[in-house]
Length: 348
Image (cartoon, rainbow, N blue to C red):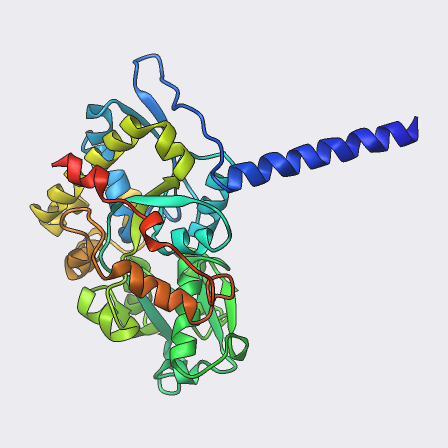
């Protein structure tokens, strides 16, 4: 009896593993269900919903663009993009708004996902150095022996941090990446000296500066700053899904892209103050509405004007990941399968 029970458990375990691998490879997907109003339900996860780099998600919802397209967007939040990615691959989410670089990393691991609309043309990330370390840590070459904050291990901030280390002539083992999340947890990590420096976004950057806790060392809030730091255009936040989901739900994908393209146009034709007015008050509670608005005005150019993938973007991201990521370095990656412009082109 015990032997039979063990065999059944083994079969169940193997079945679960097979289903997991199928899901991760993008081999299966379901048709998007509809709610009582007839809207297609899309479970959308964001790796830090209140970050300004992901602002288009809540803006699209508050402007009513999802609803107008017949989309019931069920939005949830994770502090790090890698966690959102994991949930989508496990079938718990239909789509992710996160950094494009995950699509390249995932393809090298045998998983098929694609960016369908590009929301940022620059990462919006800044490497902040703790104020008492600012005089000694003036470049990535000084990261040796230091603890560097990232939103999560395997996250895009982790990718970028490790690339900066390699550009500074260091090995990844020369510094320690520490998962500290974003917002208040990142600020606490700086304040309590758990990290010496770290990569974060607005409005956390402004909070750190207002409290004199940290100073910016590398600024990637603009295309020019990003090219200086990384050697090329680095497309960041995007809407991505498994290839299987896209193939199963092309009309739903088109409607999602339509909503985001409308949102990008709205951002491009409105002021930072007008955009801030559409955000929940909780988004700027920790820093103040004025500081939040100023921070947004300073980095507003990071948003894509049209949702299209920049022509030199994928190659730059591949170059960055190939410098340190063992799953990408030396592996053949078909960049044309990591994104598509077809839905954005049809949105006009």
